[in-house]
Amino acid sequence: MEMNLHSVADIKKNDLVLLETKLLKYCTKDEHNRWTVQHVQMELIMIYLLNPADKHEQMPVVEAADEINDLEI
Image 1 (tube, rainbow, N blue to C red):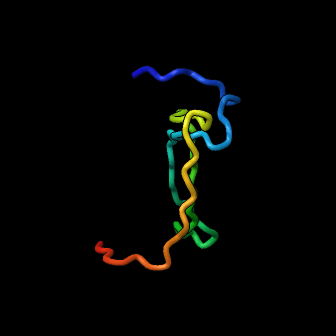
Image 2: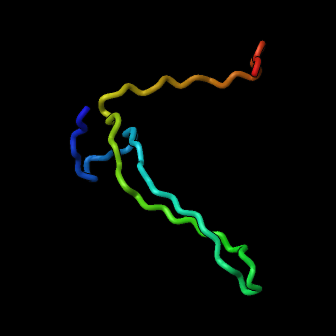
């Protein structure tokens, strides 16, 4: 399935998007020469517009139940 190309300006509030990223986690030495300082870097590769807000219906608001009976995990 071919996806259409969109401008970043086309993304609006409540659009459903998928972010493709590259995460890199690494450690560096602290002032005591121990590998305790952790860093994380994120590279944004692609943004996929899965469902524009104007094409899906708002989900109805459901009140939270106080108790869930017969729940098994």
